[in-house]
Length: 288
Image (cartoon, rainbow, N blue to C red; front, side, top):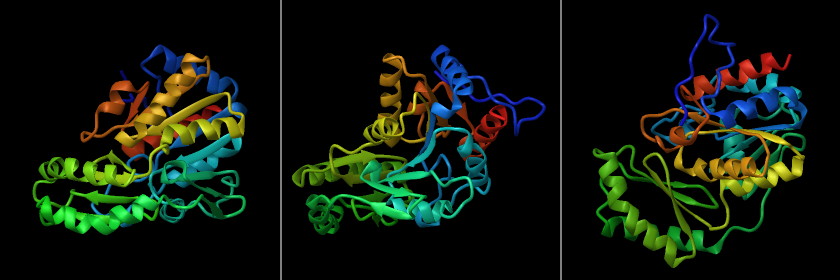
C-alpha cells in the first residue's frame, strides 16, 4: 500500500522513495535504463485538477514544462485518458511543445490516438451502441428521477452522466448506477464508474489494454503509470501483470479523498496533480 510522498528541504526536486519493494525495484530500473522507460499518465485528476465542469479542466500550469523536460530522456511519454484525444490535447496544451515531439495521447481509453509528430488523430469507427444509448438516455434519466444538477457529457465514442453538481452528488450517483448499467447492457456497452460520473462506453477498450499495446509498440522495458480514478485500475492491473512477468513497473496514485482504491495498490502516493508535477520534475533531474 502506498503512502503520501515525503518532502525534503527541496520538495520541488526531491525524488520520493516508493513504499513497496516492487516500486523501489522499478524506480531503480527506470533510473538505470531511462531510454527503455515509458511514462504514462491519466489526464483528469492526475495532470489536471478535477473541476465541476470537465470542459473547464486544464493541465496543471507546470505539467507540460515538466513533461517536456522529462520526455527527451526516456523512451516515450503517453497520456492515457477517457476523454476524446483531441479534447485532451486542447485542454492539456500538448500540441507544438518542444520536447514533446514523441508524445502520444491515447483517448477514449485507447480507442483514439493523437501523435504529436503528425498532429493527427487516428481511430476506428464508433461503436453503434453509443448512439443508441444516447438516444434513450433522457428517458432513462427521467424515469430514474435524476435530480437537478445531473448532466450529460457527450464524448463522441462514449457518453457520461455527471452528478457532481447535484445537491447530494453521491446519492444521485448511486441511484443512477443500476438504470445506466441496464441501459448500457441493452446496447452492448459497459458502465465505467468514476469520481461522481458514470460513463457508458464500448467493451474491450480500457486503459490496461491501451497501456500494454503502447508498451509493445515502443519496445519499453519499464513503465511508470500514474492515475487517480477507478478507470485507472485496469492500467494498474496491467502493470502488476507486467511485474509478474519480470517487467519493472512503478504505480503512482494521484491522491484524492474521493477514490482510495488506487492508493491502496500504489507504490507511491502523491498530492494530486501538483504532486505528479513534482515527481516528473524530480525524475527529470535525476536523469540529468
